[in-house]
Image (tube, rainbow, N blue to C red):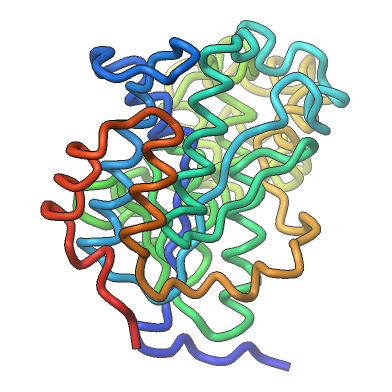
Length: 310
């Protein structure tokens, strides 16, 4: 049975990679406000403004935010212990801010989601797949290049907050590969952010040449000897390099490929956003440690985030 065509824009699911914007604020903003326990709130401040900006700008009717809580204990670490090994676990101060950001989501009536086994990227991919099955367009909000693989329909798009959206076709035109090939590409070139080494001696140019000729790694290994005829530097040695790394490269792809089978919470279907409640937002923000005057300023800056949806 074919899936229904996506409905109008106002039925689109907006899915936000919350953690990436929390860390952007944590690294980039000065410390101005503090909790009663003495924890800085710069990440909470920046994330709150980013979230309100999104709600103001897009006025979504369906919206969710995904958080990362699986570092050090997720299924990828079980497959490959070196996965993200260079990343330190959040200390007590950062953990306070991460939890406070989830409280802000709740105060704004935003559906938010985390898992101890799966990453935020997997949550977003699963939600996108489910939304697509319901005939909704998908709008991914993230700065993470890996999430482009979620774009599997012509109506899908991805964008950094404040930047223009890119459709699947636009992303593919710029990158030179299909979005569905992104896990294969990352398996070949590696991903230093996640401590995935890739195949030694294969860089972006060679990887794109390979994937422009062959659809996926299976097809590549079925035609290994033919790689020496590719018109890229070092093509003659590609068969040898890939043969040496055969087992590893398929593992790397599994690490890079987003899961679409994450168990969904019962309320995920209710990711309906009907507008935030000002009183609840102010009360929760003040409990966290944000000044009432600052919270009211955000209401004045982003009034449409608090407007009721119909």
